[in-house]
Image (cartoon, rainbow, N blue to C red; front, side, top):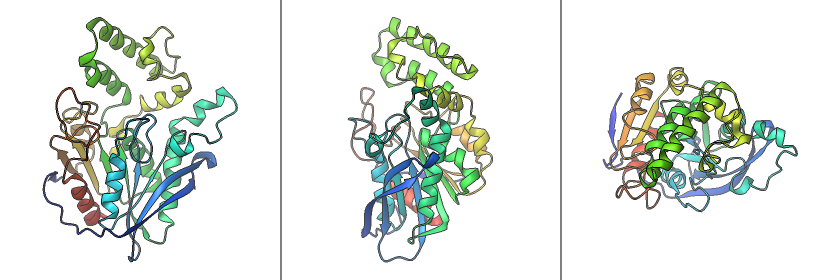
Length: 325
């Protein structure tokens, strides 16, 4: 294990000249995904990285609804500018896939939004990426951000990437993380104490129900309805019962763990050590002053969505990919 300083100067030279095009590929049960493929010009087949977005309505760029965050776009473009091809894509039901054909019956939504669906989509993306002439299929990696890191771990045993890059990825199951996010996350400091107590209590009840395979209680606080939507019960059950550490222990290739030390969603103290123990051969990059989205942390009142990624971070990630893929 090597600790990488995120603010060190990158050594991989900039290529700058790369092509960009929108692409389509088939995912779980032939659902069509849309993404952006960047490939350096004038190179023989080389390394490539597929980027997998985090939870919620997050698109290929790392944007979520009206929040223009752009972390995945910046990483993808930074890698392509250093000679590494990249694929990033909109999740099902997000951005370009929003108006795609949805199931006709509400009862089919649980399968449409299942963990198997999201992992199947990622597997389809990797198959497409490996088929491109600019890509050496033996030199590919999956980069997952947040929930995308869990997806990357879940598909690693099947798609067998040469490397894994886990960015702000939980080492604990989602149920524990959600409980902590509700009780101690960014919004908790602005929530009245009585309301926060209700949110924490209801979250614990909801998580327990999901883990047991039971319906989420109908009397939970309205603010939690979006966290525990009825159509995502199957997805939540998977994510709240899967142990990321167990998945990580099965991967023995090159791995890079990237974690912002100001992340209030995934803990540098409680999640990163678990992944490090499961991946003792992994390199670790602790981004000083980095938030969950690897942006520059300003103060406790700022969620850390705006501005560029902490300077030096993308270059260091590209350096790692160049040397390990």
